[in-house]
Every structure is written in structure tokens, then in C-alpha cells.
Length: 107
Image (cartoon, rainbow, N blue to C red; front, side, top):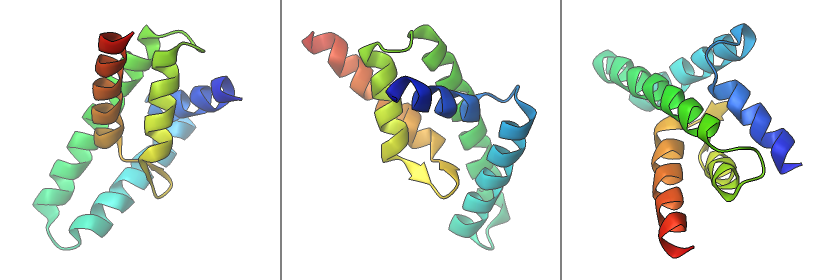
């Protein structure tokens, strides 16, 4: 079940899948607009940071095979940082990097 859900999350992170891209882009725009209402400069910055983080998460997720603790960490961070119809990609990335780093230090 975790593998299937992680695959779905990765698909949302992958900007090469047209439907996922369209839904994710719309959700990011909506979330940033709600957060920064009339501050359009911050909306633009928010969107940029979310797209960059989504791309980095996609690269990070590709490094770890399904079922590894690292892939499970990415999944859990994704679940923790849901943001409306999508994810707060900047926080998922931060959470994933910090948790994976800590996991490697304690294992």
C-alpha cells in the first residue's frame, strides 16, 4: 500500500505527466494565491519555490527504490505536508532531506 501511495505522490511530483502537471500547477497557484492574497510578487515567489522543490523531490525520490526506508520517509513527509489538493513541496523537501539525513546518521 505504501508503495502504491508513494508512486501516486511521485506522479504528482513529476512534471512530465500532463494531467498531474496541470492539476499540480493549478493547486500550487491556488494555494499561493490564498496564502498571499493581494501580494502578487509573493505569489510568484511562492509558485517558483514550490515548482523548484517539486522538481528536487522528484529527483530525490528517484534515488531510492520503492520499499526502502528513504522512500517511506518521503511518503510520510508528503502525508505530513499536504496543502489543499497537493503538497507544500518546499516543506516536503525540507522534511525529507532532514529525516533521510538523520536516518543515515542513526542506522
